[in-house]
Every structure is written in structure tokens, then in C-alpha cells.
Image (tube, rainbow, N blue to C red; front, side, top):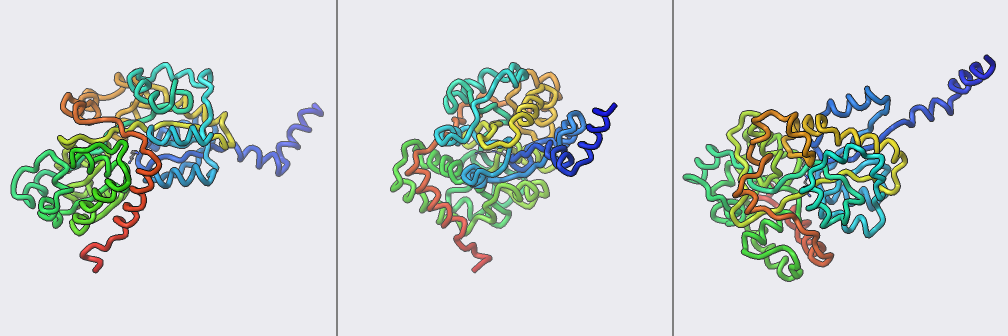
Length: 359
Ligand code: SPD
């Protein structure tokens, strides 16, 4: 009886209340990259509170890692993993705490293992491709006919000038945009010396006046409301616009484009790795992975989730890659430091370059 009273008193102490409040899991994910009810369902089922922040560029995420930001789960793309592993930023995962990992697609795991050998530090989450989101009627009317399935609609100054009035947007994703640009030029981004980056950048500056926005978040709404006719886009963001009723198609340019796998990791400075394991294991449930794909329209890495997707989604081009898409896509490589630095320098100038409206 006395022990019970003592426990009740302890529970009422301010320190105890703080400790209870600290049952908090902090997550840093890409924008528009989860079904909100997944968060609330997890909170309701477990009593764990989630603090959920988002980012829209690789640079924001890198900065969070560099600053040792207090997150328990972060979502880096596969090509960032080698650097993060080398810098000791990622926890080696205890697979015994992730029993639902048995549901993961072995092909996705195998692709990912080229960046995280033996899949020790990262569990695949969602994946996709970079391509062109095209609002067909608007784009064809401005272009004067059907568009080629080519990066030329953005990178050729004459072609993009025709589309400028109906709105072109480019992802704020320097490495991926340069990957597309080098493919357009018949080259590969891998092992590209900085001087070649600088020379390719001339094309970017030439088309800058034709580009309405360089952005990876607001462009989703602009596509959804029909305010853009062409966007260099990530798969799911383009498919969502179509789902919203816009006549938008997702095209992988014939010259080739990069694919990405976004992953769930536990930073080494995580305050609550125990909660992080519980949430990652929850995300690895097939029905939860399907719920997220249904909301975001990004394919997941969960082989057992297909049965929980509608037939329409299972066969949607972009969620299911057809032969042509498969042929045109390659995994985004991890860039050498000097290539990445040259891209960063050019990109900062590209973003800041004044558009005609600003002059
Ligand atoms: N709107 C969510 C987009 C997430 C895309 N991740 C792509 C990562 C490429 N590095």
C-alpha cells in the first residue's frame, strides 16, 4: 500500500511529468511523403508522440546531419548513404528489432546494397524517378504540337522558350538535374570533371529566363492547379497532379534519367533509437506501406504491400515501371566530391540568376 502511494507521489512530481512527455519520437522526412493517418494511428496505438518536420532538398537534409539535429529518424536518398556511413552518422541497425523487414523487396535491397553494403544502415522506404511532368493540352498548345519525350523541352533554349509562357519548373535538386542534363548531352554524370560541369552549366544559364520556378515543394500545388505545363519532377508528385484531375503525364526522357531510393535511418545521435525502431518496424508493415503509396503515389519497397493496393495503383505507370521506363532509368550515382562541389557552385548562381520578371 505504501509502495503504491509512493509511486503515485513520484508520478505527480514535475520530473516524472517531464519524463513522460519525453516519450517523443522526432522524424525528419521529405515533404508530401507520408499518409498523415499513419502518424496518428501510430501515436494512438503506442502512446508515443511524434514530432514531424519536413525538408524538400538534399542540402537541407545534409545540413541537419552536419548540425547533429536532434532527430531519431531521417530519410536520406541512397546516393547520400556512402558519405553518411563514412562520417559515422548512421546507426548499424539491429535487425532483430525490425522483424517486418522480411517484407522488403529483395531487388530493392540488392540495388541499395551497392550504397550500403549488406543493408546494414538503411531500410528502403519509397523510391521513384526524376522525369518530366507534362500537362499535355497546355504544353501542346504552347509548343504547337506534341512534345518530344526528351530533356530538350527544358534544356533546348528554343524549345523551352516556346513553353515559358505556360510555366516551366525545375526541381531544386542539383545533382539529379545535372544527371539529366549530362544525359541530354550524351554524357554521364559519373566521373565528370569540374570543368565539364562548368561547361554544361552554360546550357542552364541559357534557359534560365524560360524557367518560372526552381523548387521541389510548391511546384506540387502548381501542377495540381494546372499552373505549370512542364516540370522536372519526381514521379509521385507528377502522379498526384494527375490524380487531382489534371491532364498530367509523367515521362522519362529518352536520353535517360536517374532513379532514387529514399531510406529510413537512425542517426547515431538519436535520443530515442528505441522509439525509432518501433516506428520503422511499423512502416515496414505491408498494409502501412500500401497506405503510404496510396496517399503519396510513390512506389514502396515492400514486396508484401501489393495485395493492399488497388489494381489501378498496382499497374499505374510510374508505380509499376514499364519496359521503356526501365530501359531509360539508372540509379543516381554518388558523385565524387569535386564534381559535387562544382555543381553546388553553379547551382547557387543558377538559383539566384534573375528571371525576366525580376529585372
Ligand atoms: N515530395 C517528395 C519527394 C521525395 C523525393 N525524394 C527524392 C530524393 C532524391 N534525392
